[in-house]
Length: 228
Image (cartoon, rainbow, N blue to C red):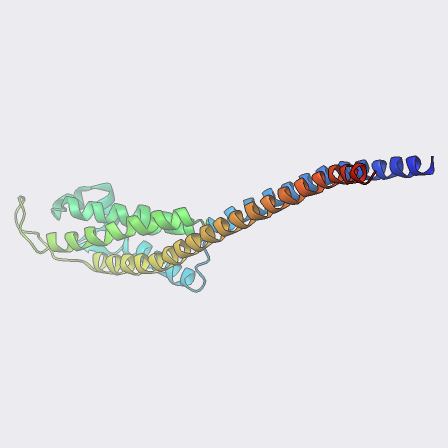
């Protein structure tokens, strides 16, 4: 009788421990999900460090270039609005494209990337700023080359030169930030693959141990019958 009671107590103890295990597993799964969400959030952010100050200064310089003469008496704002001053200076499409790219990507997306620290916004700012550098070179070339509307009345203005240099600075530093974050993404993905493979190995090992533990009680009664 004492043996039966002790066995019942052991079964009760095993049952209670088995009931506790799912709750612990669920708590661990919830913690793991929170950890993965935190990792994804960190992976989507950038830490430009001292480059943030350089980019911020370059953005301010790009903003200032909009009020400086783009060519002749026409400023970049005149180019954006296509007013009579811009028409009088024979502003061509390359200058308009450069000024718009500077405004949207060099100033707009760069400011958003600095404020939000999002990797995607920094990548968009980099791509748009790189295209703006090419457009700035074409705008410079167009102010020194005769076109369909005749010779340009004036050459390159200070606003175009300063804005073009600012876009080069913005492009360079965003490229360094994005490239560093891309390498971090690759290393993080490799680490996650290694962790997943290690977790799979541990799960297989636990399954084998559970199978061996389940087969052990069956082998003991069989051995007792053979002795009898």
